[in-house]
Image (cartoon, rainbow, N blue to C red; front, side, top):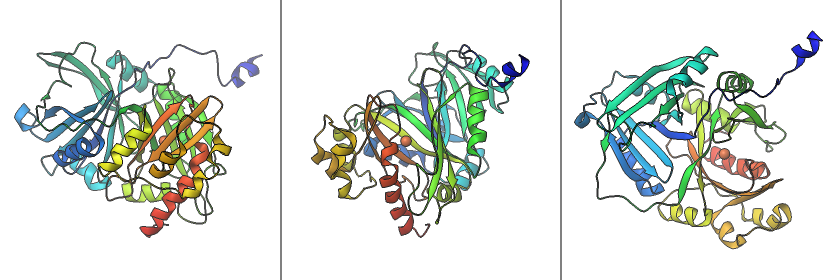
Length: 376
Ligand code: FE2
Protein backbone atom coordinates (compact mmCIF):
# COMPACT_ATOMS: atom_id res chain seq x y z
CA UNK A 1 0.00 0.00 0.00
CA UNK A 2 2.71 2.40 0.99
CA UNK A 3 4.72 1.57 -2.11
CA UNK A 4 1.78 2.42 -4.34
CA UNK A 5 1.41 5.83 -2.76
CA UNK A 6 5.13 6.51 -2.99
CA UNK A 7 5.09 5.69 -6.70
CA UNK A 8 2.25 8.06 -7.53
CA UNK A 9 4.02 10.85 -9.32
CA UNK A 10 1.04 13.11 -9.77
CA UNK A 11 -1.14 13.14 -6.70
CA UNK A 12 -4.60 14.67 -6.77
CA UNK A 13 -4.56 18.09 -8.46
CA UNK A 14 -3.94 20.69 -5.79
CA UNK A 15 -5.04 24.28 -5.92
CA UNK A 16 -2.64 26.49 -7.85
CA UNK A 17 -0.21 27.89 -5.27
CA UNK A 18 1.06 30.47 -7.78
CA UNK A 19 -1.95 31.89 -9.65
CA UNK A 20 -0.67 34.00 -12.57
CA UNK A 21 -2.77 36.49 -14.49
CA UNK A 22 -0.38 36.54 -17.46
CA UNK A 23 2.76 38.39 -18.52
CA UNK A 24 2.92 41.87 -17.05
CA UNK A 25 5.94 43.05 -19.03
CA UNK A 26 9.23 41.93 -20.56
CA UNK A 27 12.30 43.94 -19.52
CA UNK A 28 15.36 44.10 -21.75
CA UNK A 29 18.79 45.29 -20.63
CA UNK A 30 20.24 47.15 -23.59
CA UNK A 31 23.26 49.28 -24.46
CA UNK A 32 21.14 52.28 -25.47
CA UNK A 33 17.57 52.29 -24.21
CA UNK A 34 16.61 55.51 -25.98
CA UNK A 35 17.50 54.02 -29.37
CA UNK A 36 16.06 50.59 -28.54
CA UNK A 37 12.72 52.19 -27.58
CA UNK A 38 12.75 54.06 -30.88
CA UNK A 39 13.41 50.80 -32.75
CA UNK A 40 10.53 48.94 -31.08
CA UNK A 41 8.17 51.87 -31.63
CA UNK A 42 9.15 52.39 -35.25
CA UNK A 43 9.65 48.80 -36.37
CA UNK A 44 7.16 46.91 -34.18
CA UNK A 45 4.50 49.58 -33.59
CA UNK A 46 4.76 50.16 -29.84
CA UNK A 47 3.61 53.44 -28.27
CA UNK A 48 5.32 55.49 -25.57
CA UNK A 49 4.02 54.68 -22.10
CA UNK A 50 6.34 55.79 -19.29
CA UNK A 51 9.90 56.84 -18.55
CA UNK A 52 12.18 56.55 -15.50
CA UNK A 53 15.62 58.15 -15.23
CA UNK A 54 17.47 61.09 -13.70
CA UNK A 55 14.52 63.41 -14.46
CA UNK A 56 12.25 61.20 -12.32
CA UNK A 57 14.74 60.72 -9.50
CA UNK A 58 16.35 57.48 -10.72
CA UNK A 59 20.09 58.18 -10.78
CA UNK A 60 21.75 55.00 -12.07
CA UNK A 61 19.61 53.88 -15.02
CA UNK A 62 17.11 54.96 -17.64
CA UNK A 63 14.04 52.87 -18.51
CA UNK A 64 11.50 53.35 -21.28
CA UNK A 65 8.19 51.48 -21.01
CA UNK A 66 6.37 51.04 -24.30
CA UNK A 67 3.03 49.39 -24.97
CA UNK A 68 0.98 47.85 -27.75
CA UNK A 69 -2.41 46.43 -26.77
CA UNK A 70 -1.69 44.06 -23.84
CA UNK A 71 2.01 43.90 -24.62
CA UNK A 72 4.45 45.94 -22.52
CA UNK A 73 8.22 46.09 -23.05
CA UNK A 74 10.67 47.94 -20.82
CA UNK A 75 14.07 48.96 -22.24
CA UNK A 76 16.62 49.66 -19.52
CA UNK A 77 20.19 50.93 -19.78
CA UNK A 78 22.78 51.73 -17.09
CA UNK A 79 24.09 55.28 -16.68
CA UNK A 80 27.25 54.29 -14.81
CA UNK A 81 29.87 51.69 -15.58
CA UNK A 82 29.85 49.92 -12.24
CA UNK A 83 26.41 48.40 -12.16
CA UNK A 84 24.79 45.00 -12.39
CA UNK A 85 23.01 46.19 -15.55
CA UNK A 86 26.31 47.17 -17.20
CA UNK A 87 27.78 43.80 -16.26
CA UNK A 88 24.75 42.02 -17.72
CA UNK A 89 25.18 43.85 -21.03
CA UNK A 90 28.95 43.32 -21.04
CA UNK A 91 28.42 39.59 -20.66
CA UNK A 92 25.28 38.96 -22.71
CA UNK A 93 24.86 41.86 -25.10
CA UNK A 94 21.30 43.18 -25.33
CA UNK A 95 18.83 40.65 -24.01
CA UNK A 96 15.88 39.83 -21.79
CA UNK A 97 16.51 40.34 -18.08
CA UNK A 98 13.04 39.94 -16.60
CA UNK A 99 9.91 38.08 -17.51
CA UNK A 100 7.51 39.92 -15.20
CA UNK A 101 4.34 38.06 -14.28
CA UNK A 102 1.10 39.62 -13.04
CA UNK A 103 -0.06 38.30 -9.68
CA UNK A 104 -2.73 39.15 -7.14
CA UNK A 105 -0.27 38.97 -4.25
CA UNK A 106 3.42 39.63 -4.84
CA UNK A 107 4.35 38.76 -1.27
CA UNK A 108 2.61 35.39 -1.43
CA UNK A 109 4.13 34.61 -4.87
CA UNK A 110 7.61 35.24 -3.48
CA UNK A 111 6.88 33.31 -0.30
CA UNK A 112 5.43 30.29 -2.13
CA UNK A 113 8.30 30.05 -4.62
CA UNK A 114 11.22 30.74 -2.28
CA UNK A 115 9.78 28.24 0.20
CA UNK A 116 9.92 25.69 -2.60
CA UNK A 117 13.56 26.38 -3.37
CA UNK A 118 13.63 29.45 -5.62
CA UNK A 119 16.54 31.84 -5.11
CA UNK A 120 15.25 35.28 -4.20
CA UNK A 121 16.16 38.06 -6.63
CA UNK A 122 14.11 40.73 -4.90
CA UNK A 123 12.32 40.56 -1.57
CA UNK A 124 8.73 41.85 -1.71
CA UNK A 125 8.70 45.63 -1.84
CA UNK A 126 5.80 48.08 -2.07
CA UNK A 127 6.42 51.07 -4.34
CA UNK A 128 4.23 54.14 -3.84
CA UNK A 129 3.41 57.34 -5.64
CA UNK A 130 0.38 59.63 -5.93
CA UNK A 131 -1.35 57.08 -8.21
CA UNK A 132 -1.27 54.26 -5.68
CA UNK A 133 1.04 51.35 -5.03
CA UNK A 134 2.62 48.43 -6.85
CA UNK A 135 4.06 45.48 -4.94
CA UNK A 136 7.05 43.77 -6.60
CA UNK A 137 9.09 40.69 -5.74
CA UNK A 138 11.33 38.43 -7.79
CA UNK A 139 13.12 35.10 -8.11
CA UNK A 140 15.98 33.90 -10.27
CA UNK A 141 15.53 31.45 -13.13
CA UNK A 142 17.95 30.12 -15.82
CA UNK A 143 21.15 32.07 -16.48
CA UNK A 144 20.93 35.67 -15.27
CA UNK A 145 17.23 35.82 -16.14
CA UNK A 146 14.65 36.58 -13.45
CA UNK A 147 10.91 36.42 -12.88
CA UNK A 148 9.35 39.44 -11.23
CA UNK A 149 5.95 39.17 -9.57
CA UNK A 150 3.93 42.35 -10.09
CA UNK A 151 0.86 43.18 -8.03
CA UNK A 152 -0.76 46.31 -9.44
CA UNK A 153 -4.41 46.06 -8.39
CA UNK A 154 -4.02 49.20 -6.25
CA UNK A 155 -2.36 51.32 -8.94
CA UNK A 156 -3.83 53.77 -11.44
CA UNK A 157 -0.70 55.42 -12.87
CA UNK A 158 0.82 55.03 -16.35
CA UNK A 159 3.13 52.15 -15.44
CA UNK A 160 4.86 51.96 -12.03
CA UNK A 161 5.93 54.29 -9.23
CA UNK A 162 9.29 55.84 -10.19
CA UNK A 163 8.10 56.32 -13.78
CA UNK A 164 6.34 59.32 -15.26
CA UNK A 165 4.01 59.25 -18.23
CA UNK A 166 6.09 59.49 -21.39
CA UNK A 167 4.57 62.27 -23.48
CA UNK A 168 5.76 62.45 -27.08
CA UNK A 169 4.36 63.38 -30.44
CA UNK A 170 6.06 60.38 -32.03
CA UNK A 171 3.86 57.31 -31.69
CA UNK A 172 3.73 55.20 -34.86
CA UNK A 173 0.55 53.19 -35.44
CA UNK A 174 0.46 49.71 -33.95
CA UNK A 175 1.03 46.57 -36.01
CA UNK A 176 -1.69 44.46 -34.41
CA UNK A 177 0.54 42.71 -31.88
CA UNK A 178 -1.61 41.76 -28.87
CA UNK A 179 0.13 39.89 -26.04
CA UNK A 180 2.96 37.48 -25.17
CA UNK A 181 2.01 33.97 -26.32
CA UNK A 182 5.10 32.24 -24.92
CA UNK A 183 8.76 32.87 -24.01
CA UNK A 184 11.43 30.31 -24.83
CA UNK A 185 14.57 29.76 -22.77
CA UNK A 186 17.79 28.19 -24.06
CA UNK A 187 19.64 26.22 -21.38
CA UNK A 188 22.94 24.32 -21.42
CA UNK A 189 23.76 20.70 -22.25
CA UNK A 190 21.66 18.30 -20.14
CA UNK A 191 20.06 21.18 -18.23
CA UNK A 192 16.54 20.99 -19.69
CA UNK A 193 15.17 18.51 -17.16
CA UNK A 194 16.66 20.46 -14.28
CA UNK A 195 14.70 23.53 -15.37
CA UNK A 196 11.58 21.50 -16.12
CA UNK A 197 11.74 20.34 -12.51
CA UNK A 198 12.31 23.91 -11.34
CA UNK A 199 9.12 25.10 -13.06
CA UNK A 200 7.21 22.08 -11.76
CA UNK A 201 8.41 22.18 -8.15
CA UNK A 202 8.98 25.88 -7.58
CA UNK A 203 6.25 27.45 -9.73
CA UNK A 204 3.69 24.63 -10.03
CA UNK A 205 3.87 24.50 -13.84
CA UNK A 206 3.14 21.34 -15.87
CA UNK A 207 5.06 19.88 -18.80
CA UNK A 208 2.42 20.01 -21.56
CA UNK A 209 4.54 19.03 -24.59
CA UNK A 210 7.93 17.49 -25.26
CA UNK A 211 10.04 17.36 -28.38
CA UNK A 212 13.06 15.09 -28.62
CA UNK A 213 15.97 15.34 -31.02
CA UNK A 214 14.09 13.13 -33.52
CA UNK A 215 11.37 15.80 -33.76
CA UNK A 216 13.78 18.73 -33.91
CA UNK A 217 16.68 17.76 -36.08
CA UNK A 218 17.94 18.49 -39.54
CA UNK A 219 20.72 16.71 -41.36
CA UNK A 220 23.20 18.69 -39.24
CA UNK A 221 21.99 19.78 -35.86
CA UNK A 222 19.46 19.04 -33.17
CA UNK A 223 17.83 20.32 -30.03
CA UNK A 224 15.35 19.08 -27.44
CA UNK A 225 12.50 21.04 -25.97
CA UNK A 226 9.87 20.76 -23.24
CA UNK A 227 6.98 23.18 -22.91
CA UNK A 228 6.07 24.26 -19.37
CA UNK A 229 2.70 25.88 -18.68
CA UNK A 230 1.12 27.37 -15.58
CA UNK A 231 -2.29 26.15 -14.37
CA UNK A 232 -4.53 28.44 -16.43
CA UNK A 233 -2.27 28.28 -19.52
CA UNK A 234 -1.69 32.07 -19.63
CA UNK A 235 2.06 31.64 -19.12
CA UNK A 236 4.02 29.18 -21.25
CA UNK A 237 7.78 28.69 -21.13
CA UNK A 238 9.31 26.17 -23.55
CA UNK A 239 12.84 25.17 -22.48
CA UNK A 240 15.40 24.13 -25.14
CA UNK A 241 18.70 22.35 -24.74
CA UNK A 242 21.17 21.48 -27.49
CA UNK A 243 21.41 17.89 -28.74
CA UNK A 244 24.25 16.07 -30.50
CA UNK A 245 24.33 16.52 -34.28
CA UNK A 246 26.91 16.53 -37.04
CA UNK A 247 27.34 20.27 -36.64
CA UNK A 248 26.72 22.97 -34.06
CA UNK A 249 23.14 23.29 -32.81
CA UNK A 250 21.48 26.72 -32.95
CA UNK A 251 21.14 26.48 -29.16
CA UNK A 252 24.92 26.07 -28.85
CA UNK A 253 25.45 29.11 -31.03
CA UNK A 254 23.12 31.07 -28.76
CA UNK A 255 24.85 29.86 -25.57
CA UNK A 256 28.22 30.83 -26.99
CA UNK A 257 27.22 34.36 -28.00
CA UNK A 258 24.94 35.06 -25.03
CA UNK A 259 27.65 33.67 -22.75
CA UNK A 260 25.21 31.39 -21.03
CA UNK A 261 21.56 30.54 -20.67
CA UNK A 262 18.84 33.05 -21.49
CA UNK A 263 15.69 33.91 -23.40
CA UNK A 264 15.88 32.74 -27.01
CA UNK A 265 12.62 34.13 -28.34
CA UNK A 266 9.47 35.87 -27.27
CA UNK A 267 6.35 34.92 -29.24
CA UNK A 268 3.94 37.79 -29.86
CA UNK A 269 0.32 37.03 -30.74
CA UNK A 270 -1.67 38.77 -33.47
CA UNK A 271 -5.26 38.37 -34.67
CA UNK A 272 -4.27 38.90 -38.31
CA UNK A 273 -0.81 37.62 -39.10
CA UNK A 274 -0.90 38.59 -42.79
CA UNK A 275 -1.58 42.25 -42.01
CA UNK A 276 0.83 42.33 -39.05
CA UNK A 277 3.73 40.75 -40.94
CA UNK A 278 3.16 42.87 -44.03
CA UNK A 279 3.31 45.95 -41.81
CA UNK A 280 6.40 44.72 -39.91
CA UNK A 281 8.23 43.94 -43.17
CA UNK A 282 7.44 47.39 -44.54
CA UNK A 283 8.90 48.86 -41.34
CA UNK A 284 12.13 46.94 -41.86
CA UNK A 285 11.75 43.92 -39.56
CA UNK A 286 13.69 41.04 -41.11
CA UNK A 287 12.28 37.51 -41.07
CA UNK A 288 13.68 34.06 -41.72
CA UNK A 289 12.57 32.70 -45.07
CA UNK A 290 11.84 29.10 -45.98
CA UNK A 291 12.18 27.89 -49.60
CA UNK A 292 9.06 28.54 -51.69
CA UNK A 293 8.71 24.75 -52.16
CA UNK A 294 7.41 24.75 -48.56
CA UNK A 295 4.09 26.00 -49.97
CA UNK A 296 3.78 23.41 -52.77
CA UNK A 297 2.15 20.75 -50.61
CA UNK A 298 0.98 23.00 -47.77
CA UNK A 299 -2.74 22.19 -48.10
CA UNK A 300 -1.98 18.45 -48.28
CA UNK A 301 -0.12 18.78 -45.01
CA UNK A 302 -2.37 21.09 -43.01
CA UNK A 303 -5.77 20.77 -44.72
CA UNK A 304 -8.10 23.63 -45.54
CA UNK A 305 -7.27 27.01 -43.98
CA UNK A 306 -9.08 30.37 -44.09
CA UNK A 307 -6.14 32.28 -45.55
CA UNK A 308 -5.06 32.49 -49.20
CA UNK A 309 -1.77 30.70 -49.78
CA UNK A 310 -0.27 33.42 -52.00
CA UNK A 311 0.19 36.13 -49.33
CA UNK A 312 1.49 33.54 -46.87
CA UNK A 313 4.05 32.45 -49.45
CA UNK A 314 5.00 36.01 -50.30
CA UNK A 315 5.53 36.92 -46.64
CA UNK A 316 7.06 33.58 -45.60
CA UNK A 317 4.37 32.71 -43.01
CA UNK A 318 4.38 29.06 -41.88
CA UNK A 319 1.32 26.95 -41.03
CA UNK A 320 0.91 23.90 -38.81
CA UNK A 321 -2.06 21.90 -37.56
CA UNK A 322 -2.72 19.88 -34.42
CA UNK A 323 -5.79 18.08 -33.06
CA UNK A 324 -7.46 21.31 -32.01
CA UNK A 325 -6.92 23.55 -35.00
CA UNK A 326 -4.08 25.29 -36.80
CA UNK A 327 -1.60 28.09 -36.24
CA UNK A 328 0.32 30.51 -38.41
CA UNK A 329 3.79 31.65 -37.40
CA UNK A 330 6.96 33.37 -38.60
CA UNK A 331 10.29 34.15 -36.94
CA UNK A 332 12.38 37.29 -37.14
CA UNK A 333 16.12 37.21 -37.55
CA UNK A 334 17.98 38.06 -34.32
CA UNK A 335 17.26 41.69 -33.37
CA UNK A 336 20.83 42.43 -32.30
CA UNK A 337 24.25 41.74 -33.84
CA UNK A 338 24.87 38.72 -31.66
CA UNK A 339 22.83 35.71 -32.89
CA UNK A 340 20.78 35.62 -29.68
CA UNK A 341 17.27 36.99 -29.09
CA UNK A 342 14.63 36.95 -31.81
CA UNK A 343 10.82 37.20 -31.98
CA UNK A 344 8.08 34.94 -33.23
CA UNK A 345 4.82 36.32 -34.57
CA UNK A 346 1.99 33.83 -34.06
CA UNK A 347 -1.72 33.61 -34.81
CA UNK A 348 -3.58 30.70 -33.27
CA UNK A 349 -6.71 29.33 -34.88
CA UNK A 350 -7.55 26.67 -32.33
CA UNK A 351 -4.11 25.05 -32.19
CA UNK A 352 -2.45 25.07 -28.79
CA UNK A 353 0.86 23.60 -29.97
CA UNK A 354 4.06 25.24 -31.21
CA UNK A 355 4.47 24.38 -34.89
CA UNK A 356 6.22 21.01 -34.72
CA UNK A 357 5.47 20.44 -38.43
CA UNK A 358 7.55 23.53 -39.25
CA UNK A 359 10.61 22.69 -37.18
CA UNK A 360 12.57 21.06 -39.98
CA UNK A 361 12.00 23.80 -42.59
CA UNK A 362 12.60 26.44 -39.95
CA UNK A 363 15.78 25.00 -38.54
CA UNK A 364 17.19 24.56 -42.02
CA UNK A 365 16.52 28.27 -42.53
CA UNK A 366 18.27 29.06 -39.22
CA UNK A 367 21.23 26.92 -40.24
CA UNK A 368 21.60 28.78 -43.51
CA UNK A 369 21.99 31.95 -41.44
CA UNK A 370 24.34 30.20 -38.99
CA UNK A 371 26.43 29.09 -41.98
CA UNK A 372 26.63 32.67 -43.25
CA UNK A 373 27.95 33.69 -39.82
CA UNK A 374 30.51 30.86 -39.93
CA UNK A 375 29.00 29.29 -36.82
CA UNK A 376 27.64 25.99 -38.14
FE1 FE2 B 1 7.96 29.73 -30.26
